[in-house]
Length: 195
Image (cartoon, rainbow, N blue to C red; front, side, top):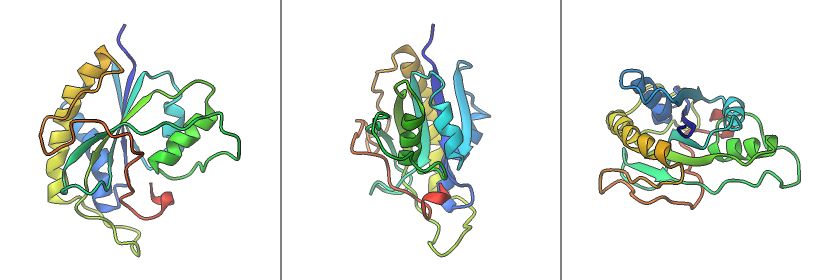
């Protein structure tokens, strides 16, 4: 039996390059992943993603735009440290799509450990100005990265289905080949309520 795998697009389509995750999921409609992979655009619905992460997956790949300090359009594969659900205190914020908060919420809600989570991140070129609520349109550089992300997923997914603990590299030398566990990527859009 194959490993259960979730590929989740996250991001706000109204905040410039933050739309990267949803754009990749839309591109996968034309170039689908294997049928046993659950592919879904979560947009800014953090609560939905938190509950989905509790549905018995072995691995989840979140596709998102993230400021990492690379050239715009660079893809990075990140493995964040997962929160401990046993931590006492009030429940984490349930609104927005800040990936760190979504993982904390999922850990708080579930009794079982979270699946292994990887983030396929793209360095944005255009970020929504803090004083604007809407900045539609993805940059040309990040739009070009959408195709590379689809190709990367077609390489990563079969490896992860065969072995959920595998660490498949990205294909280009300017894109990170090793996983980083230094935490989740930085935000692209405005405040936590935007994601």
